[in-house]
Each structure stands twice: as C-alpha cells, then as structure tokens.
Image (tube, rainbow, N blue to C red; front, top):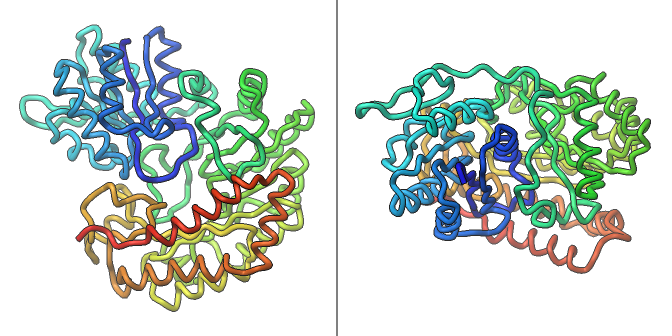
Length: 466
C-alpha cells in the first residue's frame, strides 16, 4: 500500500466510526492511491498489534489522527513502526497535534504534523513525498528542517463541503464494529452535515473546523443517507455536527426531502444542539421526518457560570428548549459539565438541581477537561495547575480530575460528580421510564450493558496522576 491511516485505541468507549480519517481515506482513494485503514479503537488493538498490522501493508506513509487522550498511543505506534522500518514517513494530525504541533515534532519518530482540516493538504503531502517534491508550499504543514521546526502558513478552510466525497466507510469494519446500546436499530451511521461553530464557549476546541459555520446542501446530505440505506441497509443516522440546527431553513429542507422521498429512517442529533436554535415548530417538523432523540448542551444551571464560560444562553431558554422537545415527542439528553471556570460547590449543586428540574430523559454529566487549544486550558495554565501531565488521563469519559483552580479541588469535583449521577438516576420513576422507553426493543443484554456502564462510571472516578 502507499498509505496506511490509523485511528489509535484508548480507554474511552467509542462506538462511532472516525469520520476524520474516513474523509481522508475517501480523498486519497479517489485520487488513485492504494491504502489501508486501521481503526484500533473499533477492533480494540494494542499499539503493538497496530504497528504489526500497519507494517504488514508495507506502506511508504503512515498517517495517524489523534485526540489528546490518544496522542500517547500515536507516539508509541510511530516509534514501533520506525524501529522496524525507519524510512516510512509518519504524519500526525487531529485536534491535539494541531494544538501542540511542536510537542509531537520533538519526537524523533514523527516526521510531519498537519494542522486543522487536512483532506487536501494530506493529499498534497502524499503526492510530494511519493514524487520527492518540495513540501515548503503545503499549507497547514509543520515539519523539521535542519534541526528546527518549521510551520507553513495556515490552510484555508474548505468552503464548499459538497465537493468532498462521502467518507470511505467501506475501508472500515462498518457497520458491525460500531454499536451503541442507545440506538433504536441494530446498526447506525454517523453523519457530518456541517462544520464549524461560531460560539465562544471557553471549553470547546475550534482548531480543526474553526468558528465559521459551513454547511453541506440538503440534497448532498440526502444523497449520503440514500447511499448508506441502499449500500449498507442502514436505517438509523446520528448527526455529529457542532451546530446542526444553526441554519433553520437548511434543517427544514432536509426534513422535507426525507418526507418527500418517504424514507423509512430514524435519526438523532447526538452531539449537542444549541438551545437558542430550536423551537417547537422546527422540532415538530424534525419529529415528523424521523428525528427521535436530541442532545442539548446545557453545561451549567448557574446563570453566572453560563456567562463565565461563554455559553451565551440562559436557564429560561434552556428550560423552554426541553419543554418544546417533550411537546414534540422527541427524547432528550442533557449534557451537563462540572468544574467550569469560576465554579464552586453551590454552582455545581445548582447544576444538579437544574438537571433534575429540566427532567430530560437522559443526563450525561462530565468533569470539565481543559484541552490544549481551548481558552480554559490557557486559563488553567495561568491561574491554576494541572494535576496530571499524562495526556492519557484527559478523556472526557474517564471520570477523573486533571486540574485544580480556585475553589475547585479534585475531591470536591469527584464528590459532586458522584452526587449528580446518584441524585439524577437513582429515582425509581426515572428508571421505570427509561425501561419503558427502551421497550419493546430492549434486550436483557442491553440492560446489562447499561447497568455495567453505570457501575463503571462510579468505579473509574479518580484523580489524575500527581
């Protein structure tokens, strides 16, 4: 193979196909390159197993896309590959290398870092390396030259997303390796119908897709749905957009096309919709078109904290959004975060009380993680301290504390985190409602998985390595 693309494994649960490298793979495949793809997360492969599998392809270039929690695994894979075949070029990309490119390039086994959106810059780099051409013109590329790290100018964002090919899911163990106990179908597909978010939340990393909202046309989105339905027999779709409903007319058009084509599908907005972009009329249309579940980013029940983290919303707007979803017959998931900037025990208790008052069908509580590239990370560096410097501890679902600042001690955060889940879920009426919602499709195995996940949450709560 010319190229091998790798999605490293990590501790966090992830039943989602990595769309980032799936888009990269599609662009490379369409350009005539031979490639292999290794989703170590889906296949639960160790770094040793990944490196052996990658070397088995005899590639000239290996690309590894990684988040913060995956970057140590990415470095280990790069080292193991270089130990056997030092002439292979190793390229890193993704949110963490984009935020801290020098950190990865200081590793002897990492040759290049591609920053931000990389579908076309990676294609340029591949063509240059295979044809031994100059790389200094490739935008978004960072590399080493004569002992110094060089950063080429930033690459412009892709404005017309319709020009991108559909993700090359056929190169992955799709759909059977991507499962979730929270879907209503045996298999599902994740879609990205837009990129970018104009919001100013201090905990959010915008270094890949940026602040500019860019959208695929409704027709292009429906073409992908139709392709997945016919090619893979997929009837459930999850939109992973940061701002799916930001363009109301586009959402209405997507719904109209689904109904006009009489597609027998169900879909969800799983990544957290902004509450100020929806109302009952829009939600009713979405429900008619098959939308059955929406996640809403609440983050805090404190007006003061909402302003401090740049959320630009209010308790009143949040409450109305949940009421409108309930009225439209859409299942709700509330995203709540503990450990926000300026937080103390009372504001976290406000969040717990607010979560119970909103009464979503499901609540997901998370301890804030200050990721490199976010404003919150810079604030912690300046005003607080990091308890852990091990990036493997920085998983949003790892239920541990990696920082302290102000009145936020690790012990307080863990106590509030346990309390949030206990007060919200250990309610007989809520448990019965969840079971009723899942019936008749709920299997005993799924109940066991959900209970095991709840127990795992409480077991894995810990403070990062000191």
